Length: 513
Image (tube, rainbow, N blue to C red; front, top):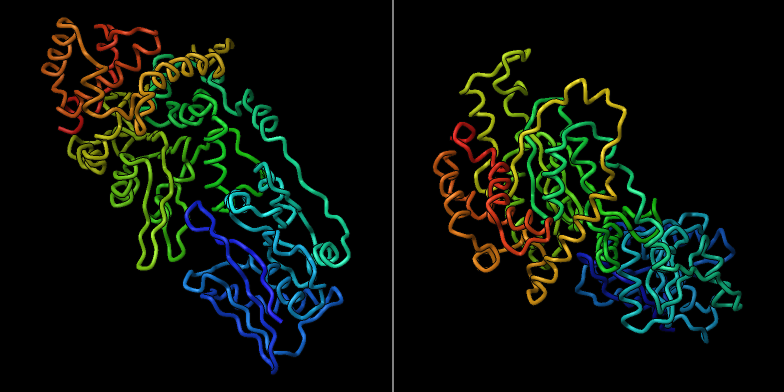
């Protein structure tokens, strides 16, 4: 007897439906074909034990199981339940007249028949709905995540016996229902980290607000203990709230990486990723023998924070250059190519010298100019070229640290940022690739960053006197456009230009030469 059951494979952030064909023939043997990996080949032992412990068995007949399309490599243990149901139907332990073909079935089996969670439940659910399946049967731990998708029935189960009884005897399964919009909007107004907790550093807060408003990459330079990490962690709290579409995109990536099981639902806050400086280039951008999204994709629609930037290996930092420009990363292998989105804000921090102090006569340790130059040169010019804002962070004096008054809250700052982003969305409404100021190319800069003669003269004087590099010119114009947007000003004035000039510390003579 031949039967068909349906599962799904995830490549990149998209799912592909897999048809599992099970044929029973005379003889003895269990033959699994269709490019399965080792985890799938071992499934027959898990399936046999799970069925036996629930009153069923794999009969002593010749079973041929084909996973179609046969030229597509399948990996992971999530096909255990799919294969088990195919075997049960083909060996007539489940009645032939059943609605099995209307469902996508996925799950890893324990030896007692209980189900373990899987990866990629959200993209699989989206694909199942697209292809017209009635429902999706999967482990209970993933049910809330899959139920985000409207128009498909999602059933979370704990044991294989529940599925067998559902198809054999019509015992109903409990459908998981999620109110996507209610779940999404309930979590928007409660940031975990708040700018109100930061003492002093008003100029740096202003700089972070500008970076958030224009989507600009930013680097913070300052001695140890000046508050660089504290400020960076609070940046997501002032970014505009995620839209439903952004939330789904972000949840899909984290689902594929198996990182949504703890939250078990849609992601409502922008991700904040802070990898250690010992990270490899593959872990940062994604890849591996079986490609998985890296840190830059997990930071999609959020913030990637690189603390102690010069301590990262130079090769690791250089692989970020292309994703910073294209806002996606493509991983190519001999037989396939996957693309992960990676539209994130880069926030980096660094000490100004190996000792951590710069031109401070009271510093406990001083570094020579040669040591400083060697330390700073670990960060390449092309990478800095993609960072719009450089700002020096100074230690907070005792008077401000001991001040009991709270600063401006993140929610208040976020309102101003959101208004500025709205102006930019309207400005770039006709563009598919540009959505906010940081993404502007030369064409948009010339069109939207026109200067009056007095402002142009101010910029020229600043570049000559401060020895600013040529790469600083466009960056200053982009940042000044954002400052003007925060004030709802159509024109860029001299004040906007003069403030933007302050945010190019590393371009000045004495830093990188």
